[in-house]
Length: 82
Image (cartoon, rainbow, N blue to C red; front, side):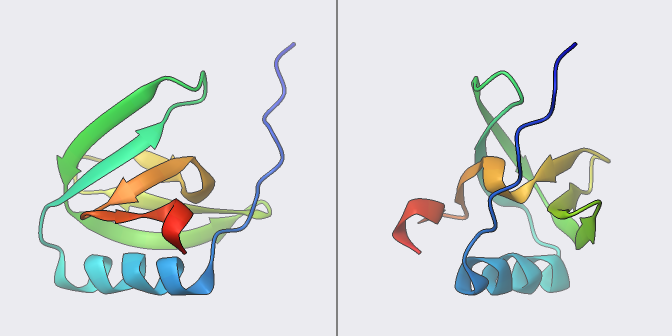
């Protein structure tokens, strides 16, 4: 049985940036690591940023949902820099 790793909150400043992008809904370059740790990349508009079950997520226009602590870089801004 595989368990989901514990959620690690991201910085408030980066979270605010994601909410800004969700408001304007323009396509952004999104780099993240999937549940196996494999690097992934998408170009898509963020449509929502929300909390559920003790973790935070974003939804892309494509319908995909990503956990915020799996993000590496969004729209040229690296999570590690925040």
